[in-house]
Image (cartoon, rainbow, N blue to C red; front, side, top):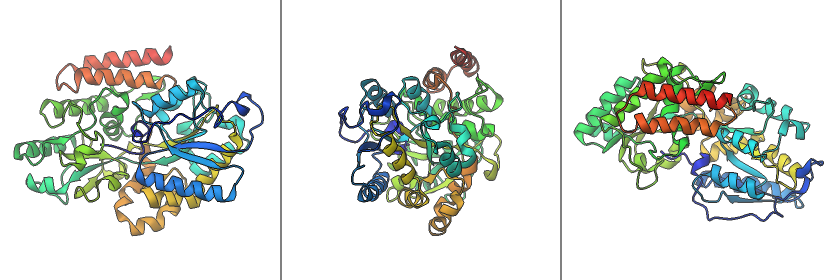
Length: 432
């Protein structure tokens, strides 16, 4: 399932290398932030590009000496890799719209992100006023903010109504609240050959793929418990083992494919009708309209937690301001401009993605009346949980994904011992 806002998926734009003069050393040495032209990178998602271009045009019309040049992020194995290399080379953009919280610790360790709390006198007040309590989940271990909360995309389970009908299932009110429900549905889909697979999340070794299979369902099943809490891995709990067991059954029975999809591995399987279900945020509507007749339900859990109490993955994407930026003052002012109530409302209208605002209900009220499809996603925003903001998070997720490849994707293996070992490795990584 492709989440175009996702930072590791931004890979369709022509490659580009920004000259150091665009966002060079300038005031990066600790001097007072200055104003002047800046560059930003944004997603290759069509709707998001439209929002970015309109926002940049509005700014440039009023700031002739502080023009913003906006381009899609360059292609690469992942945007984390692209940005990591750019930090090393000193040619990052000033701003990246779609900075994944999971990547912040690594970028910060490289010295690539600006400490917003200490650099701009109004950073804390602006961010707290806009995002409220959500800010706490994005602070780094030193208590400072190195990212600006921007948007959240609560995950739901999409299902193909035509496939369900073909399999003899209820296409309007399907039973999908528990793991057993999903397994039973998957069995019918396979036996009826209504679709080749029931669920087809990305199966490559990319560690961030855990955000599309294990993590959303684990958050739902555990009441919103993050992968790591209090410097300890949490997935060896009963809730974690239930989720791991569910996915192992999906692969063992051929309900999910362990092979990489030959087309678009995020959106393709569901959009192409190859998979009967898919896990995605509200952005999925823009990718599936006209291709699949679909419905959405909350993520399943082992015991069937009520919808209004089911946690989900926030899939937040934030804005990072990079230290190599020459004109940090303009970068910060543009960031605030892009997150005004007006521009946040435009983001929702254009993309169906919810801004990370404490007053999101007020901003989204009129939109939801006209677009009731998004109401379940809006309701889930308060229960949406992100990845833990911890040092070495990349290695933590890689360790988890290695265990996943050893004991879940093959559909066989000792889940308990494999993930007990992974949890110990992660605990050691965090302490180290």
